[in-house]
Image 1 (cartoon, rainbow, N blue to C red):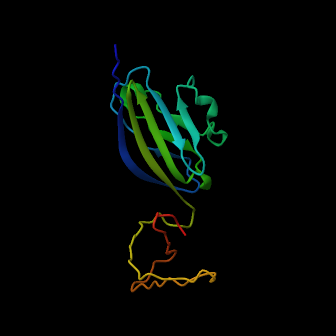
Image 2: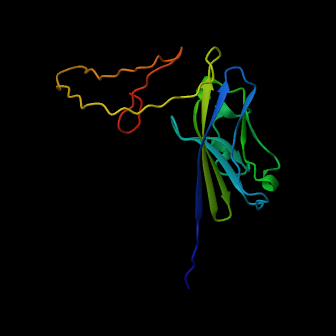
Image 3: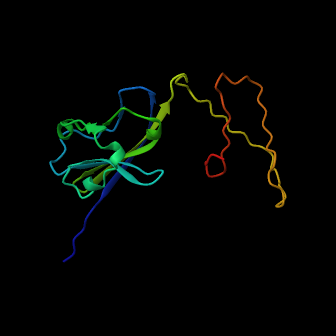
Length: 176
């Protein structure tokens, strides 16, 4: 006798949300189908700088005790989420350290839904900006091993707006 289990995993993608310094709250959106079964559980986590649980439902879950203290009392989810499918997380009194990636994971029977939200925290005085991303292929620059640094060429023909910045990333998309 053999049992066959099927686990469905759906990754919806990534959304970006901006919040301005001094805001009372921000909603990290995540939705699934309505009329979820009673045994559905929801976990909101942050994978960086170290993996941590932000919000866990139900509070009887094994991960509830592992909820990060920085988020205790600052997070809430729609109480009617089983009926509506809205598992968005409200984060109260957002602060600079809240900036980054959040992952919403919904366990429904054998199915798993995972969605990522990137929260961008904007300090007062900065405008909420639209980002212009320009990828440039530059000539290969060789630096001798005994040199402490090398010069990477970069020129623009347009004026960057006030507060504009240039960000360098390596081949693995890490800021350098």
